Length: 70
Image (cartoon, rainbow, N blue to C red; front, side):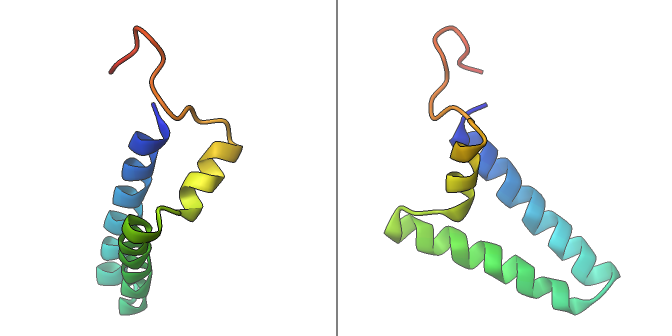
């Protein structure tokens, strides 16, 4: 998987998990939901996302290698 796909998967997981935790544990978890959404929003304009920096350091590829488009 590429950085773009990992980023979408992680953001989706964080949002869904924080919504469930907000419902089941404490409404304070909705602040985490808002943080993830705000981070996605700012990255659309600044073209910088902390999670992408982290994924690059982990060695996640930027693009799919030839023959592995899925």
